[in-house]
Length: 220
Image (cartoon, rainbow, N blue to C red; front, side, top):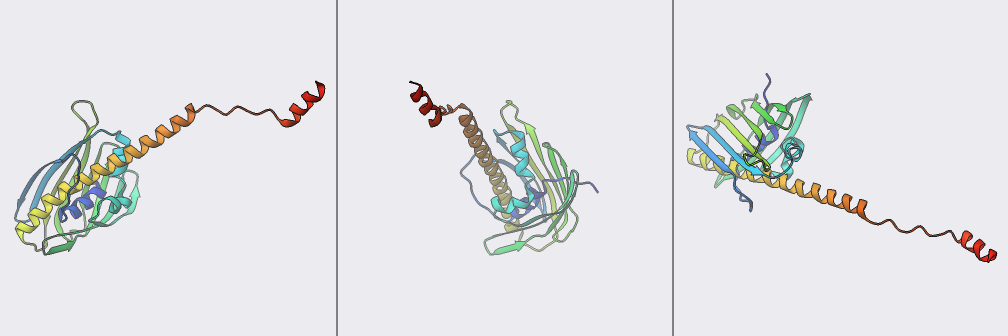
């Protein structure tokens, strides 16, 4: 079954579902629905970065725990071309409720365009599926990143706690992903500026070997 997802972010999203935090950056938009453990959400944010950098962050599955703190495990089990199996274990909590979630995601990538994912383990969810989409911004400056998730939990949790944790965690996930994109953009720009500066720096004058100078003095 070919399923694509922002696996890393999927798991991250799930992890983020249960962990809230704030970031000092442009806030993403988020539409959220919850009913009897069924969650549907769509979030998005804009970023002025090149498409390759955005894609590198979204598909950096093994390193997601480094920039999404609630993701404890994110490991690619196997890959074949644009399809892969991703194991993720996000962990988070709200007030006195804490839980580690288990996901085994079938992921399909459309390079630099989209990631589609679906959980096959059904350990914590009856179904868990979603996607990440990269679209050019309407004004032609940068890109819009769109995340959507449709999931039905099969574990016990107080409805009001789960709902707050999911919506807050989703917003936090989007903020952290955006921050990582901007961070890598700045690093890449700095390296490019340094390389350009090196090419523009004047080369030092080559000194005349002392043996040649001495020979010229003897002739004189």
